[in-house]
Image (cartoon, rainbow, N blue to C red):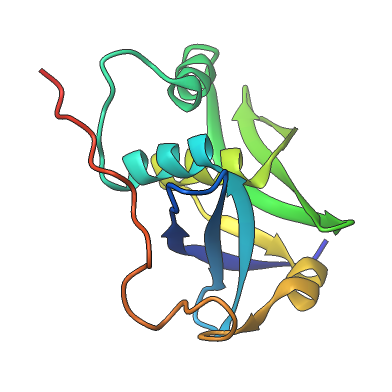
Length: 156
């Protein structure tokens, strides 16, 4: 599968809706595309981007902890398919010298990729089908997001 490296370009959080938007942009290119995600995934991503820790591990933290304790290392996340307006992703994990691929929702994979600092790839066919030129449709390059995550109380 031919892939294109992408980067997280934007997280749009609207506290009046269950559907949030994350935007991936072709690294070094002009194409980008939105992925609809749930509020919990968007807030988890927002926390990771702002390096905010919770007093107890949340689900994405738990996955990271389990991977680490089992000797696995997340190598990359690939948005691998788009079927019936639903994106699919694969986590590529190294364990004991072999690569294990695990099916995942793109939102979860992107949270883990951001946290681990690993690259995000998109299958070329998915990017070709879903992408728009930057600035089209959802205002990727037009200033601050119309909504942002509500501030969370600081840990004590």
